[in-house]
Image 1 (cartoon, rainbow, N blue to C red):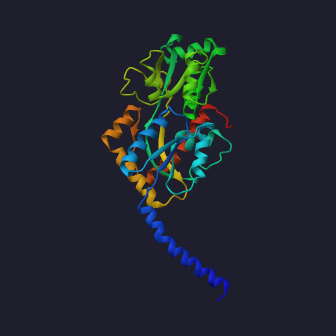
Image 2 (image 1 turned 90 degrees about the vertical axis):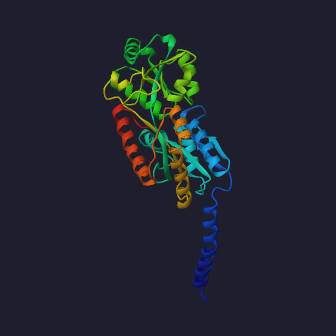
Length: 323
């Protein structure tokens, strides 16, 4: 027998042996803890949604779901980690419009391809941000915010901690003509501390962290970035009511490393679809200012590509050069 024939036979034997084992592994998934990577610091909407879904998935599967925050570089650090993880379904990422859409246009070089390096499973939903200012500033509307920035350009700063908050501020600058300059922070907590200290004038923050600041009375909501008002805050106008054409929405989703087996992806999608129709889970999303967005995997892949184009247009309109 030739060496080539022996090798070919050996490979076939190995494949025949491995196929039932792989099928069994897919059938029993998950049979050990699952890691859910959140590429941002604790406290933001992505972190909270990740923990809510982690609890839901744990109840469904009986296996622990460990939420792991790997923050830094606008979500790039955590996203790269997931890209390089084994494609076995045991490392997942809570993706955001920052990591898998806006960053594509905000950076000249990314250590990952937002589409080609990941399996896009399903979105959790859509949300928006809220322009928040310190109550001590005396500012009560987005018009006043813009006027104050124009009158005091040397003190006109907005804080941001991800691309969503950055682009919200940049688009406001563009639409209002306010000479606001962006200041980058590692976390929403650090940005909020500087807002309360008067070092910056506004933060465009996610709904949940924003609403959590209201009871203390130290921060005031001026306007939401979405095209319509929040049901929970009917008296807070949209920014577009003052500056037509201003609109930004944000999404969160679930992705896995490229090459994750199709049966595992199908299971994960089914669980996410069940969650999107579960009244208790939907109620928790609504508390976070999110509307569920159930769709097939094929629809989500198309949606993800469209969002890359959407954010490319927003980045270009805001005149933000790639880093």
